Every structure is written in C-alpha cells, then in structure tokens.
Image (cartoon, rainbow, N blue to C red):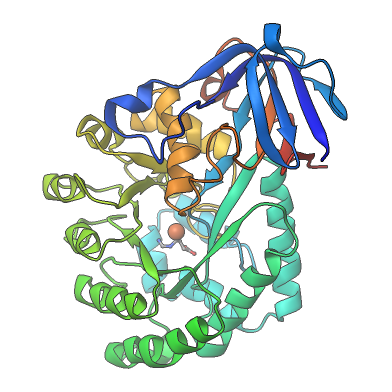
Amino acid sequence: MPTLLIRNIGSLVLAETAPRPFVAGRDMQALPQVNNAYLLIENGRFRAFGPMAECPGRADEVVDAGGGFVFPSWCDSHTHIVFAASREQEFVDRIKGLSYEEIARRGGGILNSARRLRETPEEELLASALRRIREIEALGTGAVEIKSGYGLTVESELKMLRVIQRLKEETAMPIKATFLGAHALPPEYRENREGYIRLIIDEMLPRIAGEGLADYIDAFCEKGFFTVAETEQLMEAGARYGLKAKVHVNQFNSLGSIPVCVKWNALSVDHLEVVSEEDIESLKGSNTMATLLPSAPFFINDPYQPARRLIDAGLPVALASDYNPGSTPSGKMQFVVSLACIKCGMLPEEAIHAATLNGARAMELEEDYGSIAVGKVANFFITPPIPSVAYLPYAFGSDLVERAFLRGELVD
Ligand code: NIG
Ligand code: FE
C-alpha cells in the first residue's frame, strides 16, 4: 500500500486523536493543533501524525511542507454549482438600486437561471459544472453538496440531478446531491401553487428517488417563494423516500420555519441572515446544523448572519459557500472563513471548525471527512509558511491553499 509522508509541517490543524462528530458552542474555540508535525498517509487515508521528533524515516513519497500549515479540506455543504449561465446583468441592476427580491419579482433571479438551464444540453451543463469542481478542488474543498433547483420541470430537474450524479465519477471528493424542486414557482404555475407542489411530490420525487438521484430534499422557504406549510409538506414527502431535509430558511425573514425543520429532524437549516430567539431555542439539543453562508449577504448587500448569538447559545454552526450564479458567484471557502470572522464575529478557530468538521456533519460525512484523524480520508491542503491559524482569515486576499490533496493525491 503506497505511503505519503508530509514532513516539517508548521502546524497540523484540526488534528484529532479522539474524533468528534461535530463541535458546538464554546468548544468551537479550542482548535486541536500539533506544531512542528509530520503526517503519514497510507492508501489515501490518514495513517499517523505527531511531532517531527517522532517522524517515521521512510515512505514511498515524501513532501516537505517547509513550515507551511496543513488543514483538513473545506467541507462545503451548500452549493448550486450546476447552472447554465452567469447573471452579471442582475449584479449591475443591484448596483443601480434594485434589490435581489425585486429582481426575482420581475422574473429574473432563479427564473432567469431556470430559463437558461432548460435550453442547455446535459453535456454542456456537465462540462461547465466540472470546471467549477476543478476550481473548488484547487481552492481546497474536499467534500461538496450540490443542489438542483434551476430546472423546475420534471425533465430539467432530472437533468440537473443526472449531471450531479455524473460529476461524482469525475472527482475524488465526495458529492451529496440535494433535490431543490421548490426553489421558485415556475411561471407555468403562477396561478396554481398547489399544482406545482403536487408536481414535485407526485411526479418529481418518485422518479428522483426511483433513480437514486438525491440524498436530500430542500425548499426555499421565504416570502415570495415557498411557505412554511408548503416546506413542511415537502419535508414530509421527502421523508417518505428517506430523504432528509436541508432547507433554505431565514434569508430575508424569520417565518417560523426553523422550529418546523427541527421537528422534521432536518439535517441543516441554511442561510440564517435573520434569526429570532425562538429559532435559537428550537435548535438547542436538535440534530439540525445551523449553516451560515456569509458570501450571500456580502454579494447582495444584506445583513450578515448573527453567528455569535448562535455559538454563544451553545449551538454548532457550519459555514458553506452557497456557490451559485445569483447570490454568490464564488466557491472560495477561505473567503467565507474571512467573512465569518470579519462580518459575523466568529473567531478564526470557530470559523475553521465550522468550514470543515461541522460542514462534514451537515452532509453526514463526518466519519470520513472534516478533520485530520487516523482512518479518515486524506483530503487536506498545505499553506505557505504562516504565523498562526488566524493568518488564514486575516490575509483575505491571498491564496493560502498552495497545494491541495484529495485521497492523498495532489490536485493539479
Ligand atoms: O441560496 N436563496 C435561494 N437560493 C440561492 C440563490 C439562487 C439564485 O439566486 O440563483 C441562495 O442564495
Ligand atoms: Fe443556496
């Protein structure tokens, strides 16, 4: 079995001797690190680590980190990277004063992406999504969730989910697929909301589940999109097919969906720009991960997520990119971590936990990903020499992911 030895690591970050499934509240501040360390990988998994004084003498391949830090790869638990076209015209419209919601009301936004996706062949969607996968691999992402939701017809939702399925064969990182039929009400159903919900439940879900194309179900629960009652109907329908929920909630309004998601044992509630005390109370003691996407309010000029209130309430928090053509045309997790610190008040140690281990938990991948622990898959990246972990969010304009590895192999 081939071995790879990384020597002279300035600090091995999130190195766990007793792996935790996730980390919550105050514990998020205590980031386990081994300074001046080695890391041994065997057959694509972490085999051993420790101080350089105990470094094994030989391995099939040796990499000198030269004092650079080693981090576990980012676990990006919320993206929409299958899409047909960019939307920079809406970006310019927002600069001129229109809001994200106003653009959506005028038929732009998600419906703009849906029009483009419907007319784009599967092969073309695959090629562009694969370029985005290669991009995020190089940015240090080592596990990703991808949503449908720009099809909004039976055939186009299936087309998106097939693209996601095919992406799995093209990358060494694990991919989780989420069915987001309830992303926006398509124009054909403008006068018939109930009809679209029925289409999702009676036609889309059985086909998607039958073909094994989705791991999770999602809905955009928001004013002008889907109601709490509709979201609950969809979670219930998903549960009948064994699909847990990961739900877009509280981006612009707190409508009371978080307690309902918790009741349905949702895996995560995502966005959370607006959070009520009742929302926080309902998350306590639940299995639902609060997933913050600070690149979205950065890009569309909204209030940032109140991470401090969540963490200070003892909750676990995950960070994800939300990479999509409308609200977040970026999959750069290092920048997400910077925003989480600068704009949401998270400490660097908390943000690193949130973007790795807790992200893995929000995809049910924590047993194999999200930290450096013996037996986990060797997805990690090496930085240039840096003074401390705080330097990573601090140097927000520098690319600190110098060498990324997936299953112990260097990403070109
Ligand atoms: O997470 N808010 C809903 N969905 C996406 C944006 C989708 C789009 O604008 O294309 C989000 O921000
Ligand atoms: Fe999203």
